[in-house]
Length: 230
Image (cartoon, rainbow, N blue to C red; front, side, top):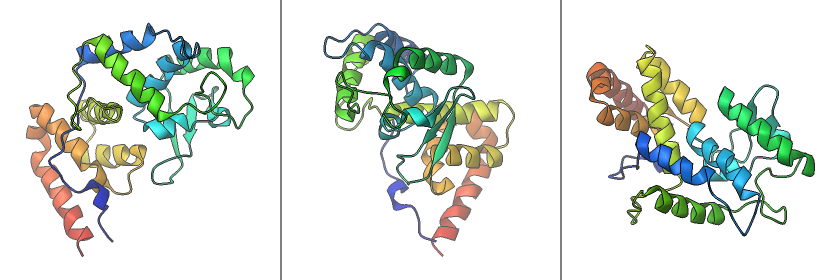
């Protein structure tokens, strides 16, 4: 088995939003009004919450079609994924309600195969437009943009989701051996090695978790590296 080289260890450190930054950012999202696309006021609150609350990548999110959304069960199927693995995300009650309200306002205008996040003329929304709005939301929220790859980037919502999810699982009493593959599978990673940066980052941000699991985690990843080098 070869190592997933796109996830080799580097000096890169993702930006993890603080609770206060999250609150301010989503206030900027929820109060946004666009002269370019009036639909943005109702689609951005759900779009950006999918990035943070569900850990989806931006292209996966923009690739959601009407037929991919199961409003009754609160499940969204992701087909346009990085590793071409179909995945399902489950919406929380609050996020499910928000999606339901969004659907009531917009879905009747769409055919089943059409994308749910669109421009004013009905075309698929582009990542460039979302990124431009992200920079605006950072500014309105008073969150400095560091630049030079240090973010905060759109993809850092996925990093923040991963850290918070792993912390929540271990805080609930789930053993790391159980939590790690769950998180890895949910994120759509090929191997648990690809999830290592999130786990190590969680431990560095929350020292009490590191004390509980450091020896165990070192053992897990030393075994993974050894196996993948054979």
